[in-house]
Image (cartoon, rainbow, N blue to C red; front, top):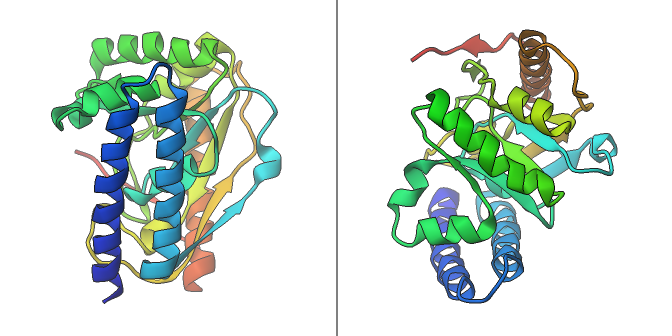
Length: 247
């Protein structure tokens, strides 16, 4: 029943706020659309608690420096974006071009200043990531990126892509790793939801200057280790290493 009620709330909120956001794209500037999307994400976090029984706990705010930075996050489910976006007033996010296939979504993403890249990766995607994130860096905005580029079930991970290192190096912005256990309660794009306390934890920043391979290893180890610890904390089971998924 909880999953059904949340699904109803999810689609009602999404439809209403999307229509409102599209109307606000007619106004000049980015702020009107940002305002409505921020309200949308916060209402969605409330709906998670009220209907699905998923309470969000945010930790590690003391690790967020007072300057523009890059959030590199673990990606368990569609709920990840709602949880982190709801915590900030102005956040540029990296997303795949699959979203542009939905009607009018391209206009909305453009208004939000989203960084849209080709899902297939490669040199073109890297160049697009560099060029579009330059606008966010110039405007002093935080940037949100999921370095695995995929949703993953709890306890698994995919190869961490180098785009986040290029952004850190090009724009001299620290990277804050973000761990979570949200997948225990809202896994990938699954319909079923499980009640409990989902944790979003900001970890100690990584400052620019690292070699690419060292940086990617450090980033992956911090995110995966802490995410597994959060999973263990919630389930009461021993901490186990995260498993690499290929393909």
